[in-house]
Length: 125
Image (cartoon, rainbow, N blue to C red; front, side, top):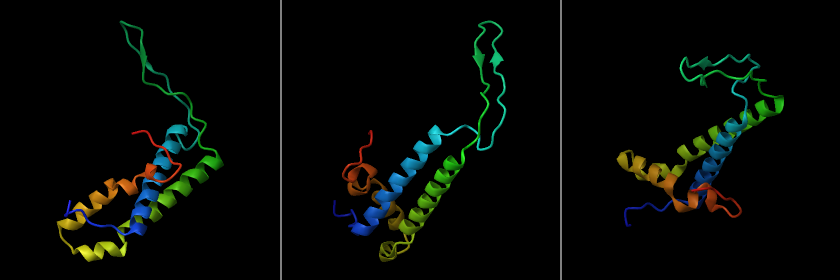
């Protein structure tokens, strides 16, 4: 394990926050209507032999102002954290070779950088 870089604690914390913000954004998106704006749905297609209906969508009410604000807030947070991680001064200490890519991937998988590593945060594995 001598090849594993020692990451600064602030970089690990930023990566953990980024994982958490991405997870919150994904969870929010799963709960939102399928269309940002109100749109009519469309009927599905009835299979001629089985009668099973496939495809189609119910009408979408669109996002509420609160949902729009939540999406905007989380997108901004993910963007800010992504930038903070990618421009952290630690990366300049590694040089400009493939070692940076390897270290970046290791940071994403670092046990302390996982979103469930913070006290009180649980995630299904």
